[in-house]
Length: 501
Image (cartoon, helix red, strand yellow):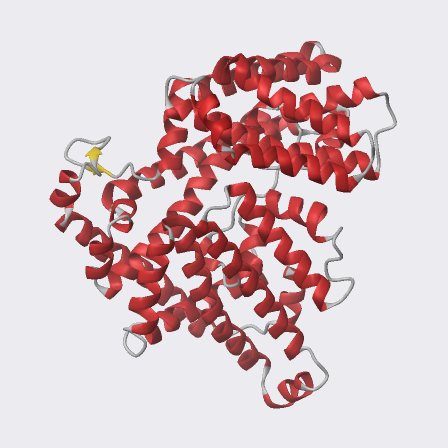
């Protein structure tokens, strides 16, 4: 994709690109400043509503309303950081003294740490899912494996079972950790099942089961990902240590990557100390009275926070996996240079994207059997993601918007590549003008992409108010300048894709 864009997109004059950079960077800073001003002006009201807490620095307040960030921060303090340190110690010691036992040692450690956090009953649930998935996979019928694993995922939404599992734990957070673990492991069970159906390992059932245990309970990826396929995990773990020169630079890599993760963590914390975007988005009154610049700042802050948050949440386990000589998916790409639905799905959670392509999109036909199969494969991929996240009403809207966005983008791409339109474009537009037209179309796509992300991150009410204020009430005052700035964002994204660092 990058190579295609590099061949197709012409370079623009450096002064023009500089203008796009200045406008993009400046609009980010000013909109964040306006959101910061609004946050401070309404700090007392937010504090009265118990939406703020004392900050990490004296004199500052902190917005803890993002459940995911607060949740993982608390668990990191309680146990996860220490168990990850233990994983590193076990991995390094076994690699040095008993290389052949490194995988079994990490598997046993993963099971023990999961048991210490989730409890025996929680791990028993995972083992039950694992055994059922493994047993059905032995029949080598992909449809049966899908049916089994989908039913297992659906049990996460079964109310009586939820109440029983909640009763096992003293706090709601402990139950949610079990819920997240089972959901992420569900993707691993599907990966194993389908790989076994298509091309089983040339080894006995006991060995296959041991590899499934290793894949499931690999500690850095266990609770929250990122996702790698069973096939990749086994191939990379099986690779002899001498094939990798990682040991020579492991310490330098560890120090540099740890520094980056700490920097990302500090940026996330800084954002929720100076901009109370999560508390503001939960209050419809505040959403209605935000100034246009502050409203834009809220939208940008929410998606940027989500991006940097996942640099931390995926960055730490990816670093440890790399030290174990695995090849984790690339970390999320900056959302401010995302200019299409397709690019967002391809580059934000690359592990999930590859998983969807391998196990849903391609087996259902993908782009090989015409437009109808492509639309069906894409729709079912988004439908699965919606189900996996919980299937709530706002997720259904989000999945539908993403599906429509991808279908429209692919439709326009096919239209402009058609034998009727393509010659007209080639004859009447210069290469630079074609790039400007692509950026203009991408601005509209980016606007809808931001809207869908607001629905995902804040709920239907946030998306509805944003749509009303920008495109209904502000169609002549807010929408045009917003699209102009998104045009600049798209040009920066195209420049970045054409000339990656």
